[in-house]
Image (cartoon, rainbow, N blue to C red; front, side, top):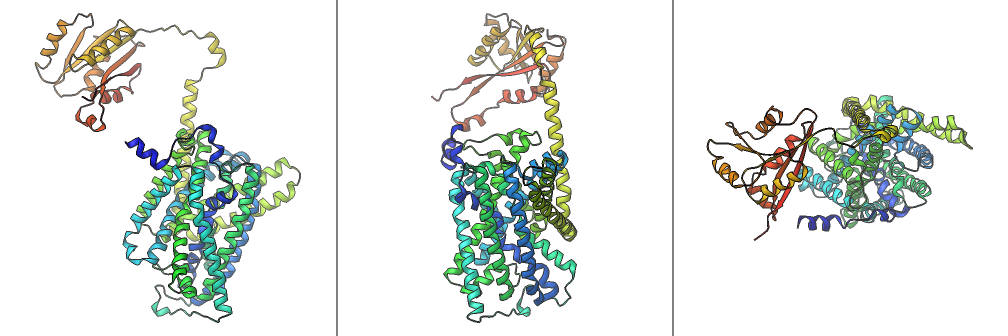
Length: 616
């Protein structure tokens, strides 16, 4: 029944040959991979205002549009740069692969760890921001924001576990709906202000944030710029997930970058302009888009449509991470820097272990930060801009070394991108360090250390297991040791007899081992054993402390046992299996505990002899 439920929720298994069917085209793939960047329109403008309004008050709206223009120019640079990355690295991996190949492995790990942190934060920030949009429309849900965010993450995980193509068909529509809704808001907002003469003047006395009267400083503008850079997170997603596109993959991915840049530039720039002319004020209970929509459309159907699409796009922006994070870790796992389970495709041909890992980490963040978007965002942009910088410098070095046809213009684009993103990293590090960015500066090196230890482990295992070809030719498979079998038994029954018979087919060196928990308890077994026509000795050990594992280990190590150093001992464990899952909990299942303990002992093989109990 459990398997049937899982199959109903996640869908039927797919054969390897159907992998190409699971890839998406430009129309369905672009909104999935661009949803993170597009969704940032809903909160990036607000983050800029949170920095400016408390300090300079009404002057914030003068600087808002200027900062937005700079961010859009940076978006254009990144788009052109990553289109070149896609062409050079069609197998995905993004900044990690670029930095590892063109700079060095350590910088590649910096990029990989930074992206992993960014993808995790993307899921947490997106779901919390989506929940904020919901609570803006329905304030009575505000106390339940953490629970709502966790439920949303679980639903996203289930949707993505169903497969790439199926999830893209479900999750792409809200992205298109959001872009259309925001464009309609921009057009209507500009019309109402410039043609109909509507003007909104905020009332500082009723605002949740005080209006400052200080002078504008360069450091303040840098802080506002760094806050608005949240609008650019997710730009690298297409380069990480190039293999998810249908053929021709490179062409489709490059087209997706153009469409993403157009959507983000128009919506982000438009919302920033509306915020400046409608004087939206940051409010923890009402988002900037909600305030603008109220001024433009009132609290009617269009307002709720905008809030609904905003909530959906913010939540579904996490799909960028669900496409990029598993793909990134699969590439790193193939290189040995992440657990190899992350490189395995699941029953729907997706990297389900990466999907589950991402969901768990995001839920931990949501609970730890109590679903507060403003606490999470300072951690957000530093990691991704670090990967941007390494990717751009890596591509620059690639063109300078290989010098293919047209290399000069390509190097110029990536060089410009490298300088722009590096400056942004410096700004983010300075302005957001005390707000929480220091956490990223600690977590990324820790992740790198873990990755290096994982790689070292895999190298150690390979060195101990590998057999060179010249040694294979001289290898003799004749055993150079004796084989002994110990069969732990609780009583003499059909299950133990079956195990003893099987043991005799393996080796004549077989013993039955029984633990006597209370004095005289084994007398019945001794009598029944005398009736059994066998040369297998019965070893009984008294265990006054009711221990099971230690007496068996002591017997294996004792001189009484006939094995010698280097001999192989098989612990053959009789274990019955019941027909109903709940019946398993009615039995001690001692064999399973013994098996787990014996795995750590050298020259000991653990084998389980199953005996199936029929349902009468």
